[in-house]
Length: 408
Ligand SMILES: Cc1cc2nc3c(=O)[nH]c(=O)nc-3n(C[C@H](O)[C@H](O)[C@H](O)COP(=O)(O)OP(=O)(O)OC[C@H]3O[C@@H](n4cnc5c(N)ncnc54)[C@H](O)[C@@H]3O)c2cc1C
Image: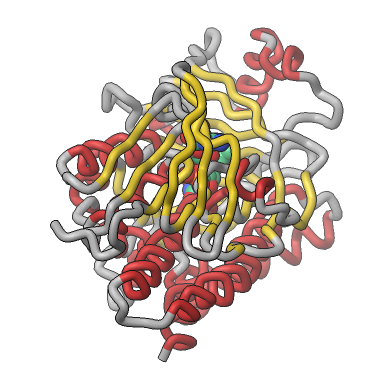
């Protein structure tokens, strides 16, 4: 493959799902790419699983969609329940989007599987390297290049790149090196994820994505295939204010929480317990000169709706396309301004707004507001045009269409 960017590679910080998809999208254009990941392996803590229609189309273009579908669970529906009464408030079915997308469903595929399968693809390409246990610690920007210090157990090495892309997560070193504000706020509570092989299938097998609205303690229940393919259920709860990690992870309190959610004989087997800080933040800028940020480095949100990683993958597709065109001389360097101009407002409108609204609806305490919300959800689900409109937004198809309209 030719390397049209002369001798300097593009450096990607972070081999999370966004970093490796960014690398694949660049490398498939023949560009030389070096990925540096601080940790020794891909992080496999339970985070993203829901992959939406718009993202599946992008993964198709990258040659990954069939493997993602094989590794995951295809789920056309999701349900919103009233936790206390155990009644379904509304059921949504992505099948209604059958004329809008070849993928009228989500695929529940854990993000470490997506990252690892992408890394396997990268290994087959001669123009890309992925180095683990290699932390980017410093960045210096020049008119014609970026210098990056990479720290390994052997010491720190200075490398030169044509461009640097920080896909190094919410605490991004690259974003901080550029001195870019991470505007927004952090929720006071944390989110607790408990993962169990207990088969919730008796009650929920018809649907592997369930949200339970409750004024005291909302919950989300999702099924994933797990590493052995046998199936695991993840339960997501808000912690109580000031609840410590020890209190949240304590076996008795874990069992109480699960039994209160779904009483059953005997205790629950719990294979993972994880606690996450939850933020709604968007970087003030997604680029400075030859350095960009993407994925969680550029924006973070609560996981209700399953949008954060999806949008990060869309960032990767957008930025890799723009960089390819500029490096090949098909477009002027100013074209790179489109990245921030489009991605930042789209994140605010489609990801921040939806996830904030989803959380607010699940946790609403005021009985009148709850009944209004429930009535609105029922009305949306029962009207085909409203149902379709709601899911076009929820699946990020609308955000992709908006971008296409703006580009036209
Ligand atoms: C409970 C939960 C559920 C979620 N569910 C969904 C969902 O269903 N759908 C969805 O779309 N999103 C979901 N998300 C959000 C999703 O997990 C994130 O958006 C996603 O991980 C972002 O990927 P990333 O590659 O940008 O960042 P990360 O996954 O954080 O990866 C960043 C990588 O960079 C590495 N790194 C950090 N600093 C450096 C450095 N200085 N040098 C080199 N490497 C570095 C890190 O080690 C890491 O491997 C969920 C999040 C949580 C917490």
